[in-house]
Length: 147
Image (cartoon, rainbow, N blue to C red; front, side, top):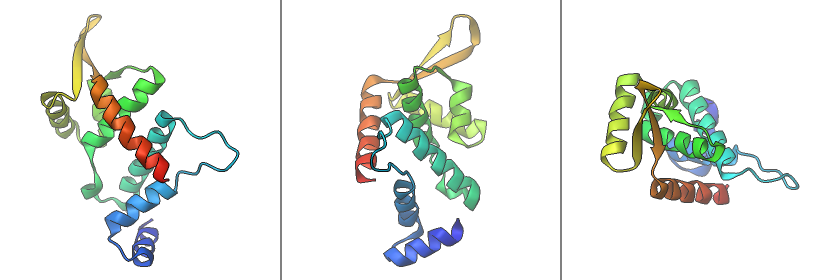
């Protein structure tokens, strides 16, 4: 993976970060004649590729926990799935204490809502606010169009 990033950066005459972004978009294959991926499927594939990149390169500098959380909330919304704070922390790919700080920050910025689970007061459900989902959908749609 590292060799691929270095070779791509050299071929494009760009930085490794820009090469990774190029690889992320190019790696999602929507072949002619296939039904294109839904926005949620595209976001899920893109997020999975980002996580594989992080694991393969072993470099924590590539982590973007807040964005990974927003992508997970978009995918969950598209799938009709609920996300707990614990699940969102897991989706971030960073230690729980770090993830919780990002959840708090997303909440403080008004991007998400947390709701106590009436069946289990220890659990909180997280949803992205509708305007947040609209903005994330727009960004993912632009990326999908560029790919």
